[in-house]
Amino acid sequence: GNSVTQMEGPVTLSEEAFLTINCTYTATGYPSLFWYVQYPGEGLQLLLKATKADDKGSNKGFEATYRKETTSFHLEKGSVQVSDSAVYFCALRGGNNRLAFGKGNQVVVIP
Amino acid sequence: DTGVSQDPRHKITKRGQNVTFRCDPISEHNRLYWYRQTLGQGPEFLTYFQNEAQLEKSRLLSDRFSAERPKGSFSTLEIQRTEQGDSAMYLCASSLGDSSWEETQYFGPGTRLLVL
Image 1 (cartoon, rainbow over the protein chains, first blue to last red):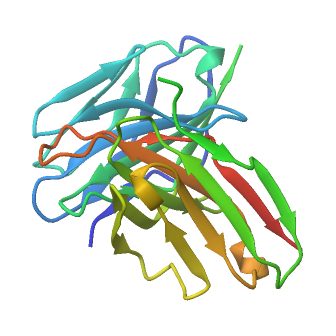
Image 2: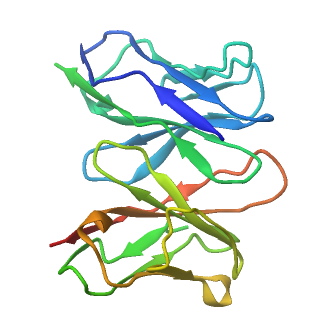
């Protein structure tokens, strides 16, 4: 079945540092890929998405490129802010419409 | 567009009691999804509706769980004879589903259930 793997453990970094969160997936067919973000005390919000190979999703300075050859959709941001502290979830949607999520990564940005 | 809303936001109940949660999707969204999220994990799919029809149920959804979406608008998720293992965040999402790959699911704030 479809599945998503995110790198283990929380990510702690200083303000203005470069952020990368790895995401790889296993799926049949051609899934759509998503990054959702969950700020403290809030619900899941869509951050960005890509629907086909080589598409780049971007929003709020975050980017992720759909890499079919490596089955990856890594999230990057060039200069993080304290307000980016949140939990980030990678997800895919296959032909059955359901979303399959990774376990999430907590990102803590220190001033 | 007021977003997806869920009620209640928190529920504490005793083992063996029944609970019911409500989800109001974004208006005009024809698809509605339920997910469950436990601590430290990503959300897991439970079931989804297209209009009033329940099209798919996960094997996570035991016989004690039932979901409805009368008239294709709001949805309810009922858990009968709750168990401590049911403690989780229950998330609802809605989308304007079609046959394209552009469909995006928008999530509500969730209902946090604690079974004592």
